[in-house]
Length: 103
Image (cartoon, rainbow, N blue to C red; front, side):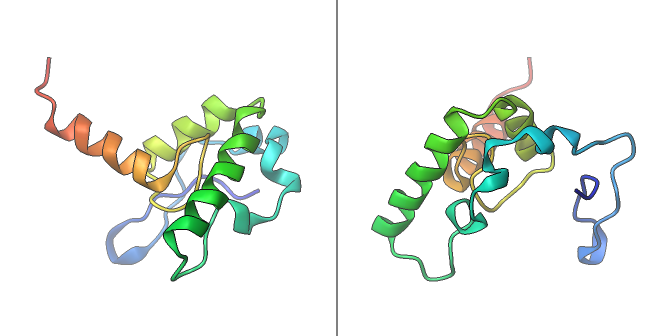
């Protein structure tokens, strides 16, 4: 597995220092087709909901779900199902955090 990456200026992906993807070696999704977690362009809403539900069910039994979800939020991952969260769910969560006043 490659190191974690973050999109930088000009679309470049510099490696995040001190990061590790070793948790992915234990992920329930490793033996599943990637197209369950990442839908095709032009996917119909009903198909997307069904695919995402299958992905979330796989994530629910994953021993590294929390690490995966944390990864998706930190980077942020904008596509796919990560740690049982969907693209729309993560986007809504990010908007909520940005709109919340600092404590």
